[in-house]
Amino acid sequence: MSRPASPKKRRLHPRHWFLLLVLVVYGLFALLDPAVTAAALGYFFSMLRKVIPILALVFVVMLLVNIFLDPARIRRHLGKDSGLRGWFYAIVSGIVISGPPFVLYPMLGDLKRHGARNALLATMLYNRNVKVYFLPAIVYYFGLRYAVVLSVYIIVFSVLNGMLLEFFVRHD
Amino acid sequence: MLSDRIKPAWRQTTAVFIRVIPMLCSILLVVSLCHQLFRDNYERWFSGNYLLDPLVGALAGSISFGIPVTSYIAGGELLAAGVSLLAVTAFIMTWTTVGLVMIPLEAGSLGVRFAVVRNVLNFFFALLVAMATVFTLGLWP
Image (cartoon, rainbow over all chains, first blue to last red; front, side):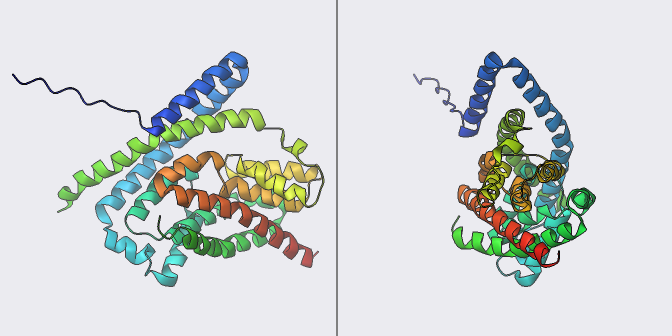
């Protein structure tokens, strides 16, 4: 008589353990300082409300990338043979792309799996600091000269940053 | 054919999101708690030491999180409180380029080595960019 197959034991993934740990920390904080915990939860939900539309957009972009862009094309534009054009794309897309970095990581991870260079991904992330639409704010607080000089240095150092990262992360 | 590509692309994209969402929620919860604990405390961290303050600024920016405008406002207030431009620039730079609490999420998508090396490099680059900016501005007073 054959025995029924035993159900497969499902283990929690580290990311789920991490979430559990964070919830435990919140539980402890709720006991120690309910006001801070409530404020933190309020802040969390307000961030989540802002992030959900961006995540939806990222989902659509990733879906389109997976449907229309084959790895060969990504490698051609952002791969190791993309040359100067690759650096140009990395800098411009870093400046143009908006949204918090954590919603971009999955998309960049997808590009990396399709053959994009580590150096160009790092350069793209670094250039997120040059924000044209935040320019009025930085000019208001620090002046136009400061904004221009800082932006130029960010672009220059982003390339160096990408090169160094690739040197250290060649076999990731 | 296009219809043949949609199904695997949908599955691939959904799989990435299912992997990312729990980590994203964890990180946002950590950030929210840190925000409540550290906000309005930045000024107290600076001693007025011209060499030490940029490091303190870079460290404060590394553990902070938010849209860049928030760092400009906080930076503007620090500057008005007498903190050096070098320290404030290091603070602004690490605010957006270094994310200590984000490392697990970044590592999940781009690799542990990538995330760690990028954050370490960005920390030192923040100091370099701050020095270069302040030096350049000093050339044309």
